[in-house]
Amino acid sequence: MGTAGVWRAAAIKEAGGWKDRTTVEDMDLAVRATLKGWKFVYVGDIRVKSELPSTYKAYCRQQFRWSCGGAHLFRKVAKDILTAKDVSLIKKFHMLYSFFLVRRVVAPTLACILYNIILPISVMIPELFLPIWGIAYIPTVLLVVTAIRHPKNLHILPFWILFESVMTMHRMRAALSGLFELSEFNEWVVTKKTGNNFEDNEVPLLQKTRKRLRDRVNFREIVFSAFLFFCASYNLVFPGKTRYYFNLYLQGLAFVCLGLNFTGTCSCCQ
Image 1: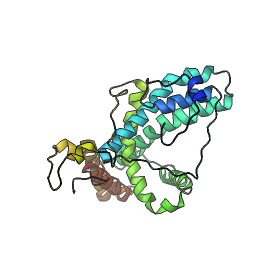
Image 2: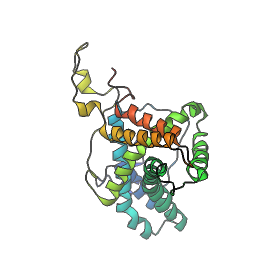
Image 3: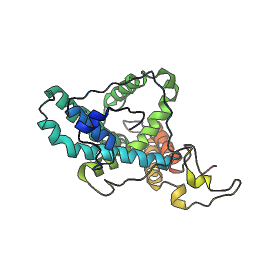
Image 4: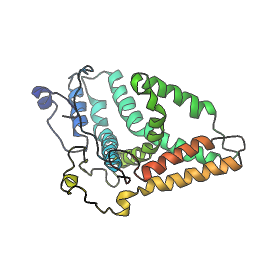
């Protein structure tokens, strides 16, 4: 259940069993079990194998389902959390504010709007000044504090930051879709996983497959990259008070790479 989750049958039964009201049914069950007083133990020294999405597009669909489902679940269980009798006020606050509102809705929405929209536009509007401590220093400290838990991966931190700047676009759209029950809020698309891609296995070796343009190019990323490159070039020619063009060029490059599927286990280069 989930990724390497082990449950007691009594906990599942007391929590109300399996429900398909959202696309994050394991999170739904975990929240209901928590409200019934059950506790979870994370065992960090056990390693298990897990299949990864086979392509960038498959990864985006997976992240959309998780982000949309989490925001939708927030809408479903907020009242249950508030009225739970066996849950302390501190835990209620943590679940509603930190676990759901901030992590599932506010964080992806704010990150996307600030770094992918407001910051690029600010280079063309002199009156719109963003303090460097708010857009660089504080986020950098938070990133380092988060990443320091996995020191072996510190060398990929810059690439992860650029990758996440692209993913905030998908997570924001998913969070708003789930929270307000917009289109695709309850759509379940099975994620193609590496090692379990039956369609690819049916193709004989050395036989090329023809893909449609929309399967080879992610147009949202391409449009965003054009916008970022334009803002970066404007800032380079007319620097004004801010000089964000280097960061904007890197962001635009990240959007281009992901827009053309130059990532993952499969790409248009293969």
